[in-house]
Length: 74
Image (tube, rainbow, N blue to C red; front, top):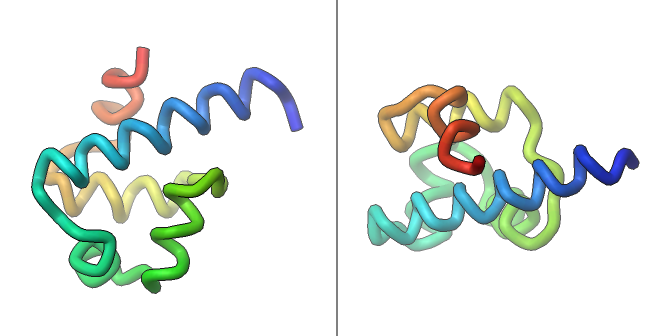
């Protein structure tokens, strides 16, 4: 995969983790709020690829927009 894509994905994953911890959510709670399985959350947080569709669901949990999450990673 493109190195730039991987760097952006890494920053995106870290921002998702930061937001989850800021809200004091466990992975289990986060999985319930997104509708994702616990293993999918674990995969995303442990070097998984964050799809655009996943990002929309994640942003909804944090009451924000995907674009705002991207702004936070720069």
